[in-house]
Image (cartoon, rainbow, N blue to C red; front, side, top):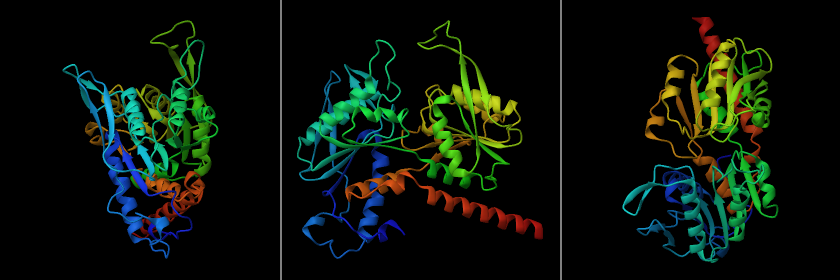
Length: 401
């Protein structure tokens, strides 16, 4: 059933308001377009009642701005009424392309700046909204989610700050460690896996891919990502393998013990196409080394799937790996900033997520279950069946020629 044909069974929590911060402005516009189209076409006898006030609108975007003083300090302003609204604030803390003036110098925005801007807009709402929800695809400070010795515990503190400011629900994607939600056990926290979107993008880009355990395998690049890889493999009915990092614990380089080697655990990958799944591609060193090891073991095509493509060390090394046939394709979502250079690479595939986020917002605004969106097994099976049918049809046509 198309979303615009979905039967309305519950009244909205409040009039919908979308507040994409500057960091994800374009993404927010795409989400808004889906919601406007669905709600304009959706029919119900209740739509003219007071409970559905402002249900159909030309736009759900709420005008806001964050101004900066010469010192770099800022203030958030909401430029229209949000009284009684069900607000969904969207922020991309990884968008380093935005700048502001700091004492006459150009300063690029850091995750700290984006998180502060989010809090400024929440403060500007001043408790007038019916409910405040935050969609933060890359969870702020998610890599500093646990404490070893006398270290800061930034992620848990950030979550506490948000709920203390009145945030009811936090939606994030592929959290580095989902257990961080234990810091706020009485508030809504969802970490979403974009596996369905990855599978669609992978099969669309590689229509001849044979998805079975004889021809394909899922790989985790480290031990911490095994749960993600097992989930991916179970959905596709494939075997799973894992690399683990052997480190030199006698030395510390740039704050961590250097990796000596990547050891592999799993079945033989020779001749099989492999999908390396991870939550993020930061510097890219791990997936690059894993891809090289897989090719050394005579793997077929190597595909890299990472929810967040940060590419903090640039793209030149990925270019060389592609040119040398070590990496065939890289898939990351458009949940975080993508540079024009990245989008122009022949090996890169952007996985579109705006429709999925719109579905989540629409469901939450109606206060309905999102379990089907979080566990998309039926939709994945339909995509796989369609792909297998297309493969069989092409094989039949080839045999007749």
